Length: 257
Image (cartoon, rainbow, N blue to C red):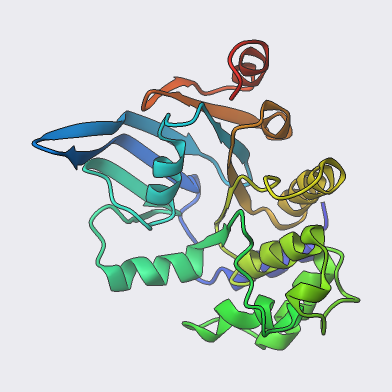
């Protein structure tokens, strides 16, 4: 592990969190939505704990509830009942202003479509989160450091349309890491990539986890992608069916995730 890089990320996270506090803790999370005069249950009592520095995959068939769970973890949606804590902060009933601050400081997001700003360079895209809230250091220096970390130190001045899809994904990851979050959440991180670029991204995630100590949580349909993680949280019909490395093997042998 690169101890200097890890130290830099730890320092950037600001106020220390109590030892032993998980990066994520979800307790008995339910989510339901109205359907005519009735309600449809999407999540049915999800409980999960993700430790610091873990690389965890959330897997399951379409309609299982994994995307809903991802949105709740990211503070983009709220549960009907239950509790969600991110890096020791209970976000369950937080105000929108508080949620925005938590997302800026503790959660990095990488979207399947990358969501880069087309008029900005790679460096400017990576800097963008650092102009919201208070963050140590200079945004430009931080962006250059992160782009070098993901192998794009030579592409600082290129705009998204001048980058390959794999390079755009790397810029999106650098942007997600800008504020040294406790968790980086990725939705189908290889969904828009060919096999070679997909494998490169997965290797990069593991390398970044090892070098920075950041927790990575990814949602995926693909058991091959999920197999790159330390363990899987497998969801079926709104419930956790399994929560271990063994879930990956069973998923690959059984239904297509």
